[in-house]
Image (cartoon, rainbow, N blue to C red):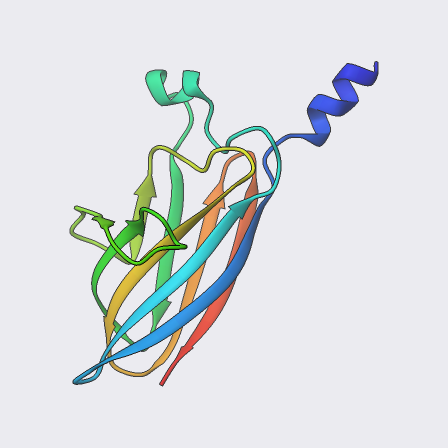
Length: 136
């Protein structure tokens, strides 16, 4: 059926987008990583958010730098507010709201040190994607 093929074609497809690194001085850096869902269906459905029957999306970050803080950028096109993530372990972030359809979300890390930061975004229905950010 045509409708079934269209629906299957609109299932979540997560991709890594642009990355940006900004030196803040004193060995501190602001690192931004864009994560995109290019399809119409969100990575987590409204029903799964309520019932918690599907595991949340998971963002992992590993590398030779120390993660001091992390948060979601409210509007990546304008400087301003970042919604800080209140978790003890910022190397493994649980994103319980997922990524809506046809949307790019920006994750911002405040890190100390130089080296690389490997960021991986994992969803149940949208796949797993990774990028490496060089910090110097």
